[in-house]
Length: 169
Image (spheres, one colour):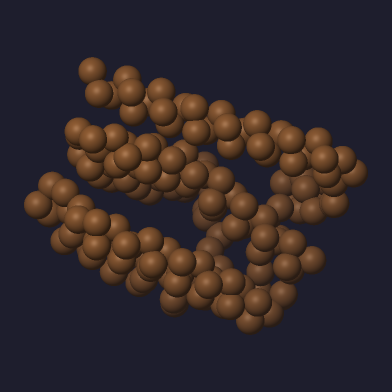
């Protein structure tokens, strides 16, 4: 059950960040103005995620945070935020900076995977099952699920293209 909970967190984390990633990639593949749109997208997304979502959620009730997040990941989050601020200070991100940030994402993903497997099941918050008991159950229609996933990914790509195209005007 602990592995399923960890996987749920990964799917939610990547799923909520995928629109920003696709918009950023689409903007950078365009010739003019891509980096400004990408940086604005990243900074705006972080402001919305931290300020709006965490702020409103904490107004509704206390937020439960796993102990290992406070010790390991929050200091890393602060360090990466400061590093990104330094990289973007001149208003652009060089290709090598993007490579460093992407390599850091891969390293952090691997690190999170290893840490999640080492955390005792008793310390993992059972958020998914407290929301809906059906979340932890296996799908009975995997082909339909894969089709919907593919449709959603196509929709995200199309939406990213439309957003970048509209922002160029």
